[in-house]
Amino acid sequence: MANIKSAKKRVLVIKTKTERNKAIKSKVKTYVKKVDAAIESGDKAAAKAALLAATSEIDKAAKKGVYHKNTASRKVSRMSLAVNKMA
Image 1: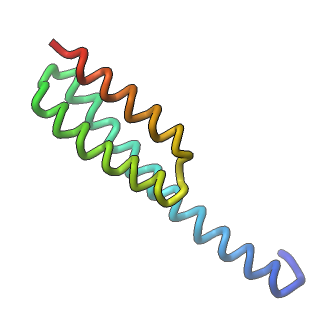
Image 2: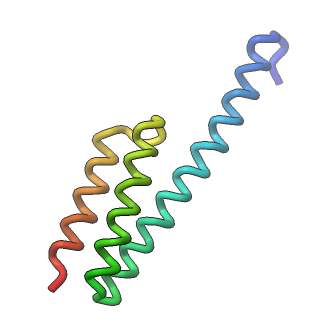
């Protein structure tokens, strides 16, 4: 543990932000899994609904700085492509 007061504070702040980022990333992964599951089952309506929800969560994560904007864009693009390829 650090000795300087400001360094101690940074350790605590980083811990808090790390937990927040983990929670947000986990939430995004859950929404992405829902899209994948809908694609696997072949239900286009459910896939589109799940895609809309997942896109929203990914955009929120990018806005908060958890994901880089290009990473978020790539994730959304790949999911959209997969949903649009469904018969």
